[in-house]
Image (tube, rainbow, N blue to C red; front, side, top):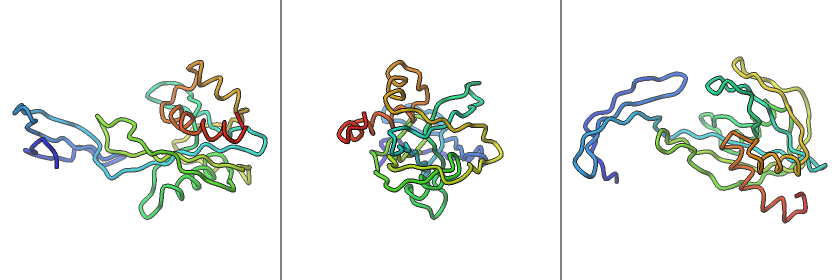
Length: 182
């Protein structure tokens, strides 16, 4: 149960993402307006690791930043799809790869002040390219294969600027170290 009382709720945008404007009375009695992306919304992120201890990543243009960012393959969980199914689909679509084993990492809320979305990261082991990527119209990206030690050196230097990718790498690190891959 929310400690805040809703006065009104209005949808202000439906595509490409749903946004609402909500008028509320907070626990202190103050009236505020909150604009956010309501749930349930989910996305999957997948860190694909090859038998050679390399990561199959993407360098994707992100228009709001004006930059190409190094990222793990990721995307929205579609209706009727599980987070694991979405991770497998995104790996195939964005990298043209499949993996023999998937390990679920802890889910997280990337921006809980603005959105109810939940991100589901996965570690994909035994990743291998099986075809060409099948990109969506708005995607501008290239596949990048990076040795794991080099990737984690980039992370430690602050060169991995996508927060969801950085957190996925953080969660995957203990497993990769236990398996002798790092």
